[in-house]
Image (cartoon, rainbow, N blue to C red):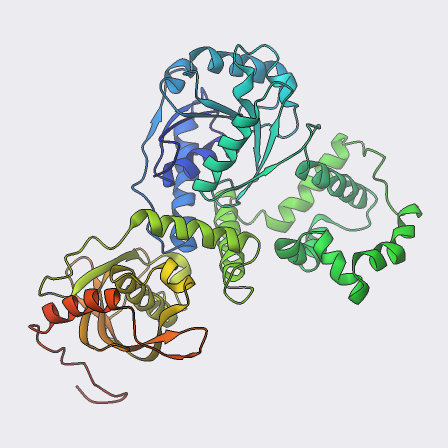
Length: 496
């Protein structure tokens, strides 16, 4: 359960709709206000993309989805909510008016975050009756996937407000980075502004077209920035002497007249048409929603890779994802099953998402192993082998697996997985898993696995904790009355 239980999103464009999706998928009820006649359609499409992305992002159990209600007014939307996210267009007079209206109708302890890309919070809160609760919460698109939000307080923002905001964002998988001083465009957009201005000059002067420029970024330093940022990358570039050597060697180059960063290109009609035509040629064959889905798949892939980096400890955005999943698992607790029932334990519910499909359009083979692994993990959590147990130095390792593929699972199909404990002792755990089609219960695949309890520090098998063994034995006793699966003990290539 998150600190925020009810939120309001004022403004349902690209950013506001994505904020709503982030909140709803975190189990938070959202009231949305946007006078645009197509607001419900636009936000609905953004939410659909977010749900698709989350299905690819994590197998951790998301909380029950929050509700999304479209309110007839700002006053109606902000009534009795804990959090208001304002995302109206970037005009100071408009934002001030909306924020003053929010402030007048929201309950006194509700926090108000503005998604402005560059306006100063002190200017925004100038006429508010309760300016101490207003702060800038500047995210990056897509908000439902990218975890960063820049937190900037104004001269009347309380320290408690920033602390509460940072803690609340962490609960929904975001990293709230506190900017020490308010400054126009904050940090991220200032960096982007410099790059954007130079890029426009390069296209204006026919040095390259938009596709070439994008290729330069995505095939080089863009890949480095996705996992190490700027200064850490340049520390490596300095060799063993590190950052000081890098600055000594390349610092003088900053005096050379390489760039036009202090000049602003004239975005006249001719240049706008030139860039627009090049952009159309580059990616106009894809619709915007299609490009969003491609972008989301790529971001999920990067975050998943980074989650397994650094010896499995995670790195960068992947470390944030791992921490977010740990909170989800902790909040979900143990599987809601009766471990003493004389039936296989139904431990995992999932759906075949598009990234799981192979060239035949079916669920690809390594995803079956992923679901079986998730089933084993669910069993381990049920018997007390949780994160704390693993961090204390003990766990179960899978030492043998035999998978049979019996049917085909297609994109979008709902599946569930069961586990039957065949035998156990103080070190070994022998299980039989099955993946079923949710509609009809057909068995699509089975996996027989042997797990071994280990002392991770010693690097060898060791008896499990007595409390873990007691829980496991209770399940084994209940399953001893079940018929042994006919596939248990089969070898590869054995005829049916």
